[in-house]
Amino acid sequence: MLSMGRGVRGLTALLLTSTLWGTSFPAIKFVVGLVDEYTYTWMRSLIAIAGLIPYLIYVLRRGGFPTTSVKGGLLAGIAYALGLWLQGWGTKYTTASNSAFITGLNVVFVHIYVAFVKGSYSFKLGLTLLLSVLGLYMLTTPTSGINLGDFLVLLGSFMWAAQIILVSRYCGGDPLIFTLFEMVPALTFVIPDIALHSLELPNIEVLIVMAYLALVCGDMAFALQVFGQRHVVPAVAAVLFLLEPVVASTLSYLLLNEVMATYQLFGALLILIAMFTASTDKKYYY
Image: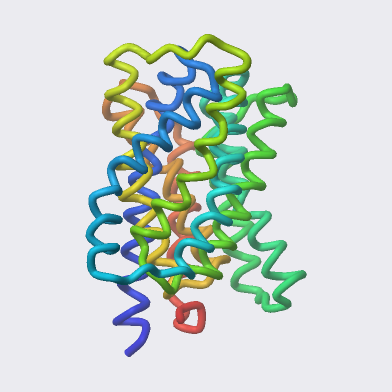
């Protein structure tokens, strides 16, 4: 059966993607506290590209070059670069909880796209959206009020939604080539970095953390996303990606001794219920 075959593989890949992304929030907060958002954006992407160059050489030697993956990667890469930059910039001026909540609102933008542009929506999808956003709010407990950082992260959230939609459209090719070219547009942020600041390499500790963000939360996670979205519709994929803040909160509890209140646990449960509801209907799989 489809739901027990390709659908399950796609679901598993997207859950792994969300898990890897969930480990990134503490690392991002650390890095952008020591380097500016331009350096963070282009250098993280440069390391990610470097990690995939051996595979690119392998593909070229085989004589094949998947043009669809290149085109899709570059288009998604524009949204990714802007989302990465805006998220990194905004996180400097807001709390980690606000950044996590607002970033997760990309699920709303994806569902709006599916409902009003694709014209294919259902009561079940609406229910998963309601449960997931309510759960996200309770889990992240964002502070009240809107500041510059929140607004920047919200713009980044819109870009993340665009990235999910573009990946869904162009995910039929090679996931690793797609991911490599998805990182390319972010390299342009080296230009304002040089223009505004003296170009200096971060210290080794920052480079190590950035390498983790680039190779694990970047290359590995995004390749899994491309593969997973071959088999899962974008509205469901966006809900599944809300496992990211659940993982982030759990790691903060386990590693940083942060306390999770009862309502936060309930929020995490609501997200898991939304994910389960969204993933149990085979009509949402390709």
